[in-house]
Image (spheres, rainbow, N blue to C red):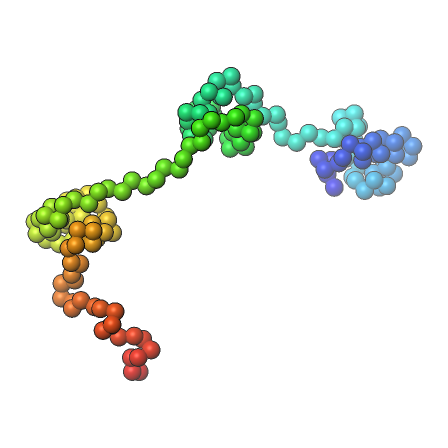
Length: 169
C-alpha cells in the first residue's frame, strides 16, 4: 500500500502507533512500509496530494466558451482535456457547439457527368477530372439516373445471379 492511498484517519492512526511503538513496529501493525511512515512523518502525517492544482480559469473564459468549440478552446488556452472539462463544469454555457455535419457536394447535371465519362475514357478519368473519389462519382451517377455499366460484363441482377448454395460442386 502506498502513501498516496492513505486516508487522513489512517495517517492519524499511524502517527499514534509511531509515538507508542516506533517506526518499524508501527509500519508492521499498519501494514505499510517503513519508508511510507518516514514520508508521512516528513509531511506532518498528512495524506499525500495527487497531481497538481489545475491552472486558474481565465477571466474571459466564460465569454469565449459561447463562441468557440472545445477543441478551439483547448488550443487557445493551451490546456488539456481534463482541465477543460473542469473549467466547463464551472461555467454556464449558453451555446453548445453542434457536431459539424459532413458536407455533401451536390451532384453535377447529367450532361456534365456524361461528358466527363466520354472525354476522360471511363470512371477513373472522370473522377480525377471532377476531383472526387470513385464512390462519390458512382453516387452522383445513381442520383442522376446514369446506368452503372461494367464493360465486358453482362449486368448482374439479383434474381439471375447464381447463389453459392445452388452452384453444383
